Image (cartoon, rainbow, N blue to C red; front, top):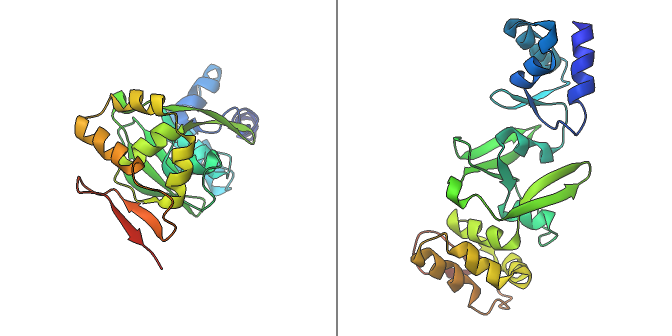
Length: 220
């Protein structure tokens, strides 16, 4: 077993492989004709030793950094407030949000005692991201235009200070191009958020829930 464990550590312990699956192990160790049962035994051994962590069904990692979890849901990108943080447009702490086309259950998950959010996106709305270097990883992160759209699409409250930063970073032409993929009512809703005077310092949150008009809520 030690021989196989050392090979697995060497191959999948680097950031070239932030996440691996049992299929990856089978391909990697394929010339040994190792059985599926023995592969699971190797994985369970590494889990018991706390060398690897299970992220989702069939996906594991040697790393403890939250930034690797998205790779268990590929294709994916990091969005919402998480994207604002990666792009230095947000300084508040927020749960990482993974947006994926995978058929997964939306909701809150846990990795190494921290929470993260998973949201499913239709394939035709999976766009608007590029790659950012984060320590040893290149991670996909939504651009400002898609970040704004997703915050509204998923009915997420938007803090006014974050919205001000987003508005300053937007490429209006790109935003208009992205919005062509959505309904007319949704386009109006997004543009309606950008029109009000965002310099109202007494306001801290925009509520985007449902199709009702957007409210600015004063928080003491």
